[in-house]
Length: 183
Image (cartoon, rainbow, N blue to C red):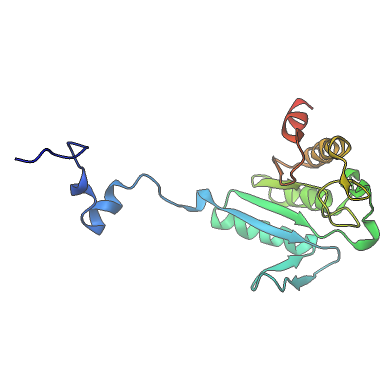
């Protein structure tokens, strides 16, 4: 008699057939797990296709409100807002991120007014606000980490004041989560 290999018990009986795997699965995806991303632009009644994402468009605030209403009707609990800041509002220091009337803050307020029960997630990063498109402030080719974190904290507070429910930093600055949480 040969010695049995580890483990002594194998639970394959629950994985042999599709119906049994479905019956005992631990993870089920439902509408409750979804977040609808909405890409925002300036204007009224504007829908601008995004070439790199077929079937997805940037929406003006009025159309973003309609999309948020549709998301709520479908049972999607949260929308994520991503602004396309106009070039004229971008700067090397990303100060538009601190403007309480910037595109994402105006969209957040409009959506909360129209669909108060939907959650709003806002990206925290400076790339939509900097003229150079980097997530951080730069001195030549050097990233100014601490100065960037200071602005990211301000951006977070700005978004929360507008009605954002979830702050979602996507930048890569060291220490930004702890700094945001302590404010």
